Amino acid sequence: MNLNIMKETARNKIVKDLLMRKPKGSKGINPVYKVVQYYCHDAHKDKNRVKCEHSGWGYTDETLWDLGFRVESDIRDYIFEKFYKSDEVLAECYLTSGKRAGITRKANRIWNRINSSLSTTRSSGKLSGLYKVRVGWSSNFFFYGDSLAEVDTLAKTMLSAIYPDDELIVTFVDKSLPGDILDRNIKGFESLEAEVDRKRKKADELKKAADLIETQADFVKTLITQNLEVAMRVT
Image (cartoon, rainbow, N blue to C red; front, side, top):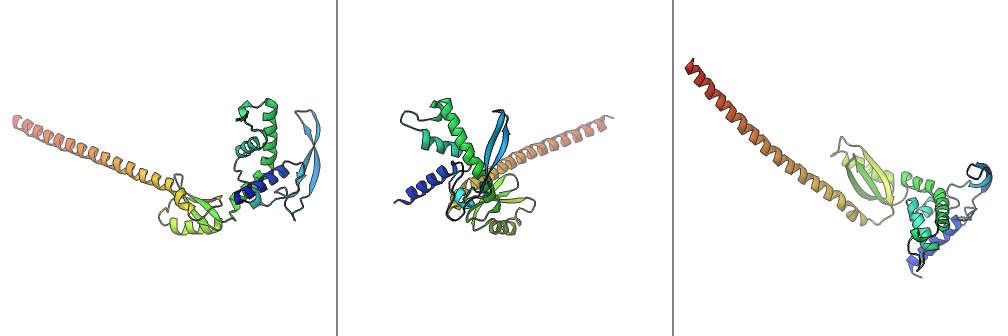
């Protein structure tokens, strides 16, 4: 079986499991659940909510990251593609309000169950892959590393020397191959080159303006000197 097909099959299986009231999770994790009661203000009555004692609802942070969802809209698009799209319905806007509500419920359930895990993956930086180094407020560079700590050390050791006044913030972007950093840094390099061009153009304009002011000042000085000489002779 094709590797991509295998990955998609595994993703579909996990998503379907996460949509269950009590997901089974990965083999060996055995998540524990408890049912808690809460008051639903919309329905004006008590309802039961399932809570899982495992933060990933039976799955590791890496497994949930590998699903490929980064924001809730990614999940919504996936749900539509898998459960609602057809030859007659090519966009969510053509669904009935009830089916759109169904997408919302499914997307909310999955997002609520994986969001904290995604945040942990971004902040902990324990995966090998692409890391973004934000320099100050304007520049972003991308490095490959085995962990956030590794890239953070590299950034603070090497970049601090040429950016002494800027704060360096490292965040995990995604799993990747080392060669991916070339493509990801193109935009940053182009931005810097454009900034250099803008500043050099501005410098040329400022120099021309300074030369003009200098010429004007010299002319006025000469004119005033001549005026003074004429006035002195008259008096």
